[in-house]
Structures are given as structure tokens and as C-alpha cells.
Image (cartoon, rainbow, N blue to C red; front, side, top):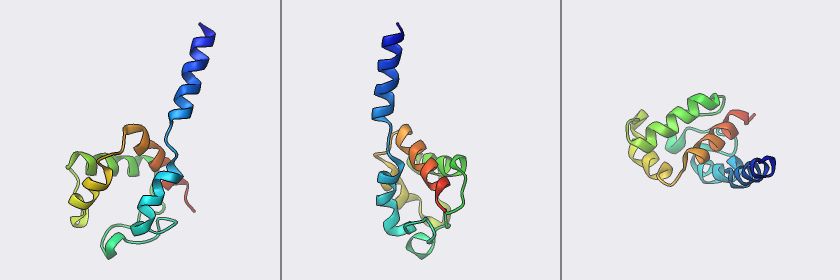
Length: 97
């Protein structure tokens, strides 16, 4: 049983998303350190907590968030993200300095 739990844990770790790699797509608009207002109109996300970023990503993906008119663009950007991807991305953004 311990072996099975260890294998499952390792599998989960190996399949966990890499927030830094995911953020490369975001950096084009948000900046390398999330310091830019995307397309000159979004909120600057640098300094956001992981929870705030995760909430925003989930809202954009579900289509319930449209802050500063960015809903349609961000819905497309988040469409392929899994829950794990969004969590990894949110954690990465929260750690940017």
C-alpha cells in the first residue's frame, strides 16, 4: 500500500503544471514580472496573491469575469488550462518579485 501511495504521489508531482512555463504565454502581454497592464488596459497583476489570481483565472475561464473588457480575450487564453495549471500559474504569479 505504501508503494502505491508513493507511486501515486510521484505521478501527481510529475504531472503537476510548471507555472513558469505556463506564464511564458502570459508574459507577452503582462510582462516578464507581471508588471504591465496587458494591452494597456488590464490590471497589473504583479503583487496579487495566489488566491486572487486563481479566482480571476477561474472567472475568465468560466466567462463570468470581464474586468476592463478583457473577458473575451482572457476566456480564450484560459480555455485550455486545467485546474492544476491555473493553480500552478497563480502560485507562480504570486511569487514574482
